[in-house]
Picture: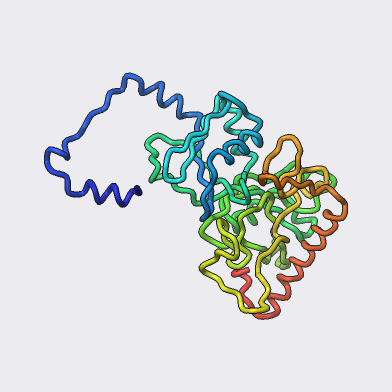
Length: 303
């Protein structure tokens, strides 16, 4: 049952049916308090999700047992995650996105008045790595400007900027779900010099390599069909090695503490120097690919 169906059912009520029903407020404060530590979540996928399996993996990933976390199916594919402490809730929000079997979990904090049919998931917060910037453009202000070209900027990782190993700019952005993810962009310096940069996304999952949207695989894509022999415009090179650090957990759920992304029965560690080098070569190929696309006369704004 969706909101449109409910509206159809209630649009022709009789005068008696249309009388307002008042509800009591005896336990209102307690109810609001209980919901205040809740997140509403929905798996952005066209496939059915095994609720019990997803629940077990989320508890394991978030290191929460028993009363620390209560997960409830509230209908229409929506889940409620009730935490016992504010710090737990914020940790989950700040360390996403999370996934299960390569299906990304969208989360929103509960707000008074929400129903199963009114909750909208329009963005997903992700860390975006910006590669190819001149060293003199690796700063917070540039991170904000570039991040705004992708979506709403949440924060810029100033710790990475301040470190002596900052090879890229790292920005957390609310990435829109209704648009293909952006692979890169031309950046114009204050002096008028243009450079092309490539984007990589940490914990990227559920990406269609045909259309660039999140939420389905290429084989299930209904909007873009590639010709025989045509190369997919999106690919694994868009997945970032988190923090560019060989000691951090990998893109598919390395067993590190805290575990922040996972795939059932498919947790792998990507900590080898070979993989790091491979990731860097893919980044260089991505930057070069942007230059080739521009030379071919394609609109860089569609990049």
